[in-house]
Image (cartoon, rainbow, N blue to C red; front, side, top):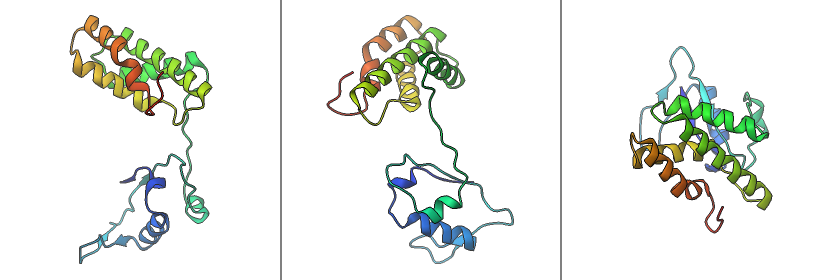
Length: 163
């Protein structure tokens, strides 16, 4: 398996170079003399993009595109985030997961109204939970206090924007 994360932030010739390497089944890393050769079973290649720059049409035509988005309805967003929180942070109190999800939903709503980009999303939600667990391990009351103290800072993505 090969993961190319945020390909839109790479140099503009990377997508076409990747097509060449995948077509040939091999590539030679910079500074190496011997190529890396794919085995009998070709690798699964997962590529992510934030769509900050358009990718070449020839590249996109060879991809299976799976757009991912968060639910638009607030209750569905909160339920989805809390579920993801439970999957990643089984040791956190469900009330903390819900409180953090509600905070993200409120911050996201304000960011949309203010036309701030990028919007806070799942990554910020999970980062917030990771911070709460790290700063107040095993104490749900301390975790709630921590959530109320740092939640808005963690979810504010752009300098100068205060949620």
